[in-house]
Each structure stands twice: as C-alpha cells, then as structure tokens.
Length: 245
Image (cartoon, rainbow, N blue to C red; front, side, top):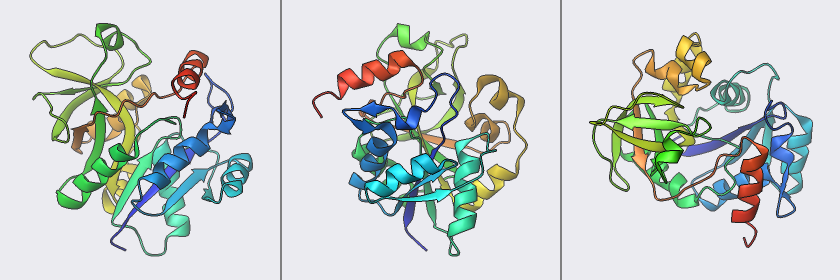
C-alpha cells in the first residue's frame, strides 16, 4: 500500500476537559470537525481510532470510519498503531497521526506534511507555526519546538527539543508545535516498542520518546494556526474563532 492514511486517536478520559471529543462547536462535536478537516485534505482514507463506542457512533452518523481500540493506551501513537495492526493487513507506506483536539486545522497543513513525507527521507515528521507573542512562549499549555535554524514557510528542519517551559537559548529559534505527526510504518512500530522515557512522562509529550532514543523529527513551518483544545478557556476561544464557519 503506497498511499497515506490519516488516523485520529480519540478518547473520552481527558482529565482537564472530560468528554472533550464530544463537546460541541457550532452544534457539532469537536471530533467531527477534526475528521472533516482530514477528509477535506483529500490525502487518503481517514479513520478515528477510539476506545469509546460513543465516539465511534458519532463518526458513523457523519459517514466516517472508526476503529475501536483498547482503553489502556497512554498516547495517541500507541492507539493508532493498534488500529493499524488490527485493521490493515497491508500496511500503509505513510501514516499521519492527527490529534482530535484541533478542530480548526487547515487541510493545507495536512497536505504540506503529506507532501514532505512522500518526497523526502525522514523518520518522524511534524509541523509548527509562528508563536504569536512572548506570552505564548511562557504559556505552559502551548507546546513549543526548538530548532537551530530559522524556518521558512513550507520548509523542514530538524527539531532540537520539544517543551512547555524552559530557559531560552537566544541563538536558537522557537515555534508553536502543531499536534500532527507523520511516520512510516516501520518507524512507528519501532517507536511503539520503546519504553516511555522520563522526559515523555515528565513533560507529557510523547515525541520525547523519539528524541530520547535518537529518532530524528523533521518539523515544517505552516501558516495555519490551529488551536489545540485542552481547557474550558481553549474551548470558549475556539468556539469564538469558529462561530462563523
């Protein structure tokens, strides 16, 4: 299988915002907005990988496909790997893991990641966007990515670090990390086999498992600025942003 498949991991047990995927934005569940953005990218098949029947039913109502997974997974990557092992006898060449809490991600951002994956050698690929302000750099709810070189739109550089808060090295460059990952199947399989690292656990950032095991992450700059919804304040902000969509 030479195409790209998009999987959206989703569950109902977020501690900061319970039942997050089913919360309504414009009278539509958040997970449905994310699924629609993936469909609009026209890259390939889209599946929601979920531990919860309630999410699967919502996706079925809009004509989408879901794969039920274990409730025990600690990360989205673990969840999508189970879905691939369970439902894909022929493994896809490229796999995109799109987080289910970014309802306003641009389909063009997903297309940018897919284009890079199809045309370059890589281990893991992801996206970032410009930080709006110094305040964003100091906001622990915003995940940042650090690079050695300044990035340009549509270009990819190697990530040096991912973090929520840290002492800044003024010689390097910092961006707002976008919660989307691209893998080849064998890299994802290797990633899943690794023990969760201390940095992954302490920062609550699964990409640190890769960084701590010398798996390189290529990061590309997009002008899309999706808001990840983690708190009730985020939810109200995204409802305001998307009220005319």
